[in-house]
Image 1 (tube, rainbow, N blue to C red):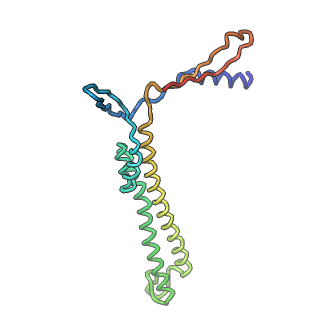
Image 2: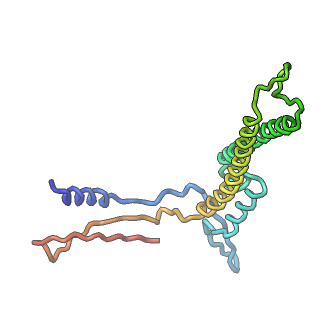
Length: 199
C-alpha cells in the first residue's frame, strides 16, 4: 500500500469522528437580571473583566490567595510548597556562607576559627574556605532567583486561570468535520474538507 493511501485513510478516520467541546466544569451560577417592570431575564455566565486582575492582585499580596480566589483550593498548598523550598535553601546556604566567611576572615588575620583543631592545625585550608564561600554565595543567589521566578509564575498562573474560567465551554460549541463527495464528478472523485463551527 502506498504512503499516500495510508495517509488518506488515516485522515478520513481522524476527521470522520465528531469532536465536541468539553463540558462546563466551572458551574457558573445563573443570575437573575431585572429589566424595567416585573419581568426577569435569566442569564448565565456573566463575564467579569476584573476577575483576572483581582486574582493576580491577591496572589501578589499573599502567594496562593489568587488560586483560592479562583476556587482552585488544591493549588494553594502546591504554591506554598514551591515557594518554601527556595526559601529553605536560601536560609541554609546563607548561614553556611556566613560560617565560612567568618572562618576565612579569622584565618586571614591569624586567629583561630571553628575549623582549627586543638593542636593548632586546620582541617580546612584557606583556599577551600574561599572556594566554599563562592559556591555557597552562588547557591544562595540561585535560591533567591528561583524564589522570585516561582513567585511571579504563581501570579501569572492565577491571572491566566481566572481568564480561562470565564471561557465559553457551552455544549453548543462543537467541531464537526465532514467529508463531502462531489456528485458532479462521479467518475473522477474529488474529496474536500468542510469545517463548520457554530457559536
